[in-house]
Structures are given as C-alpha cells and as structure tokens.
Image (cartoon, rainbow, N blue to C red; front, side):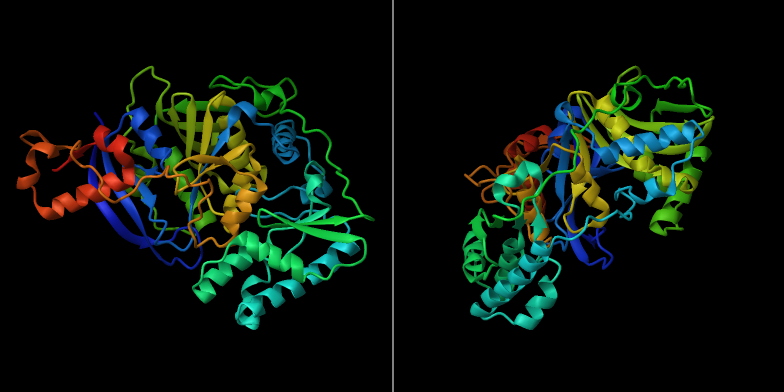
Length: 488
C-alpha cells in the first residue's frame, strides 16, 4: 500500500512568472508510492519533486497551471520538430546548417527564436483597427475605464489569419472576447458571458465592404469575399526512423556519422559527471548558483516509485553521450504504457542543438502507445508554449477532473486570463466537492501499527480530522482509500 505524510496547504512563490508572487500548494511526502497510485495522482493534476508530491492551489496562484499530456498513438511531428532532428544529424555528420536556416527555427523550450514573417495582409490590418474600436466601445458601454482597459488588453485585441484547415471559420478570427470578458468580470465584479461579449463586439464592428463577422463560441470569425487564406504547409512528414521508431538504449552509429551519439538508460544516480552538468545548467538557464549535491539529490535523484531490478517501470535517467562525453540528461517516470517527463538538463555549450525538444521526441518515440505527460502548461508563459505544439495534446480540466483536447479554442481560454482557474469541459456535476468529504476509509499508520479512522474518530484530535478532510478533498475519494497516511 502506498503511504504518504501530510504537509498540508503550504505558502510558496509562483515559479512560473518573474514576479514570484505569493501562492499556495498542497504538499505530500511520499514514503513509498505504487505506480498505479502515482498515475492516478498525475491524472488529478499532481506532480512530484523528489519524494514530495505537490498540486498548486489554483484559487491562490497568479499563474494557473494545467496538466498537459500528449496522445503518442496519434502524434505527428511538425516541420519544426523535423528541423531539430535534422540539425542534430548534420552536427553528427559534421555538416553545417546555413545561417539562413538557423534564423527560421521556431521557438522551443528555451525561448523564442527569430522567424521569417509573411508579408502583412492589408485587410488584416484594417480588421485589427476595426476590432480595437469596437472593443473600446463595448468596454465603455459596461462602464469600464477605457484607458486602463486599453493598456491591460492591448496585446489581447488581435485578429489572426486562419489556417486552411480552419477556413470554415472565415479568413480571419479573433479570441479577443475571452480576454475582454475576463477583464470585465474582474473590473466590474459582475459575471459576464463570453458569448454575449463576443456578440456585443460583433454588433459594434464597422467593417469594410464585402466583409462580415459571426460570433461563435466566444470567437469572432471574419469572412471576406475578396480575400482567402491559402496554406503554404505541405503535408506533415513523419520523423525519420532514427528519431521516430522505438530504439534500444544504445543507438547504433549512423553510417555517415563522424561523431558517435548514444543513449543510455539508468536508475537515478548522483555521480560527479551528472551533477556537474546539472550545476552548469542551473547557473546558465536559471541563474541559480546555490545548487549543492544534496539539493540535486533531493530534487531529481530521490524517488518514491519502486525500483525493482529488471523492471521497466519507475524513475530513470536518460543519458545522452557524444563521443563518450555526457552532454544531457533526461529524467522520466515510466508508468506502465505512459511516460512522465520530470526534468531535462544539458551542457550549456550544446544549447544550439535544442536538445530539450530532441529529448522529448525521443521519449515520445520510446513511450510508444501511451500518454506522454509534459508537466504543466500555462498559456501566458513563453517557455511553456512549446508544449502545445506537440499534438494532439490534452489539458486536464481542474473543475471536472477530465482531460479535454487542447484545441485553439481551449488554449485561448487558458490564455485570456492566466490568473483565473477556467473550466475547460462542460460541468455536469463530474468534479469532486470538498463538502462532506468522507474520511472513514483512511488508514493511519503509527509506530505501533495501523489505525482505521472510521473506528477512532472520537479519539482523534479535531485538528487531525481537519487535515484529513483537506487531504481527502485534494486527492479524491478513490485515492483517499488507497493512500495510507503515515503519522510519524
């Protein structure tokens, strides 16, 4: 039986924005944890850091995180993913990518890169101006401070060119109504419906000739009789076998390679070789020079998951070596058919190879037919936006505790106001309620032996009972019965 210690709802700082605003998260310490129980926790929005399990309190945080996972059975790498693989191949073959190609590489987990922009559409610029005027009119009609609203929403009031696959929505579309609705709710204290806000903006729009607008599900879709959007995208090709198919732990050397590239899988270990790369990465990427071998051990080496000899489940380090030199390490939890990415770090000298994206592609390939969990997604966090480019992805709705496909509409709703917890799925009484939670099924473990809460409620201190109710509310009724609580 899995066993945890309760740390409760703890104050912390937001780790997802530069402001480091105060926030809260519920914390458990896992004494030991069964694979199935950790899978159930992840599917309720939990993550782990060493032996500690945590879930942000989404009502007390400035940047609401949503668990994101990829359906690997239907994953098709994008052209940007293929370029990452091609770049590594060229590096291994000692070929050089031209500077022109380098400039066209998209953003990845290390931040945005310069992209060649298409020539702006005159109609797009006109619609953008019309939309801004209409939004200001709607805000003013609701009694909002137009100057303050304009400053807060100027990056959200935008018109986007639709892709060919979405041409039924019109040549252009805009999610601005979601941001406007969120702003009005906060500024006025009233509850506004995004569909009504979108329709109000549509009614206020004064469009150029031969252009119409419809408001559908809170989105504004512009239809232009004189302009259409053609796609320049060719059908997405598959990754070459060297990157897409499942591979053994040691990747064979390609015939043309001048450099040897190997992948080795081991159980987590704190060796000087691995620690020095982690230390250099933290200083280079996160400006953190206070790391120690002990902090590395507690963060990434320690794991509550079982490490059965010969088992393919549990926690692992993926070691990437170039001509025998360790250059990167991926930390993963293998949970049956599913993989959970825990962390990735590399030697700063190899940052240009985009090894974070490359390692994700390799882990997806080795995952095979399950789900690949990428941690949390926050719409307004630049370093997390690359996760949504692995498709088809799903986000966990924090209200209904169900996964929903991360469509353009869903992502826009999370991005409209990152400080608000958004229900992503229709709520039909699916979620859990903290009212009247049942703690009778909890087993408490003392040094003298286990004790059932159901048989000892009258002898337990009221504070202990309150902690147990909080625990039951955040893990849900099923895990309440499966996770034993260690009291020493």
